[in-house]
Length: 431
Image 1 (cartoon, helix red, strand yellow):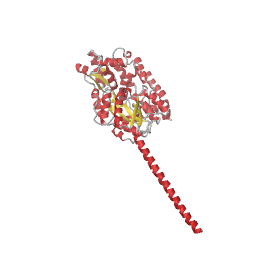
Image 2: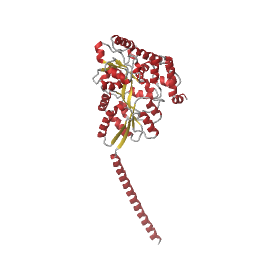
Image 3: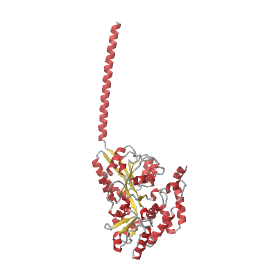
Image 4: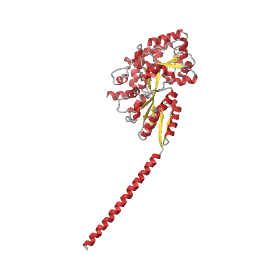
């Protein structure tokens, strides 16, 4: 009796082992099948990438490049938004926790605010960064309010500010491009004596005074001034007197009533030959060419100093790519890889009259040929107003100073308004 029970028990155990083994095998096959099914499904799924673009004038260029990218990458769809007030829209989307996948930003204070608020993905491991010129990577780093570990943008296109000039008019009178401040002032006097107007000012729009201010302030001060002022170690009053004085001197060589004419007035007048030069940047070239497509214009660096070897060209990051969320980081970087391809860099720079932040022998736009040596030798420095917060009324203060010629009030107001606009940052840094 006992032996029979024991045999039966062994037989039952063997049966249960077989059943359990069979069930486990079925489960494993099912899991593999499900996994394979998911993998195939994922590989065929179309991913949508949303891009928020702040630079509306590049919409047509970018859309053509996006169309090309989508043809090469059928599993990735790109939706681009280019609202008129992109930074406000971006801040709203961040508050609602609905950021774009990629933000196309300018190298300005708004970018620094986003980095400081931890809203941009660190892409330090992105190999494409090796293609970016060091001077522009350093420029992006200098914008950060409190220096952070990591990399948060891919600088792509740069702009430049200086002096646009009428090449035909210069050739007609035999005028030479100046390389020092004294030569520049002598040129202005010569142009007036030849019966022409050196500059056409556009100070009805207060922001236009910022362009020559940037070239002067950048070359006559240090890039450490912003951090030093924020930490209470220095003031703008100690440094902004000389650029203010030189900017005021240039008014002597403009048209009558420089505050009565707007940006559109000035670009139109220059395109028609009403002035020999215009104190602005390459961003004004499309506007000028819309009036006179055949104008033979060029651009040279504003020679702020009397030591020509020390003058730097004011050039900032006009377009940078930042990944705003990690969900589709791989696809985002694939698009940026596409934009960094030599053929696409050439296309973008040519159509936007920009200069590449990417390493390589990319052609400089013909309008900017006189600036080429500065780009090739990395003799460039960022726009001071890229470090100014959006609510700092720098343009209005400069306009008011030029109208009233009250330097003391201007300098004191600059310090006061800076502290007001940066009070939270100053409190944080000084704490």
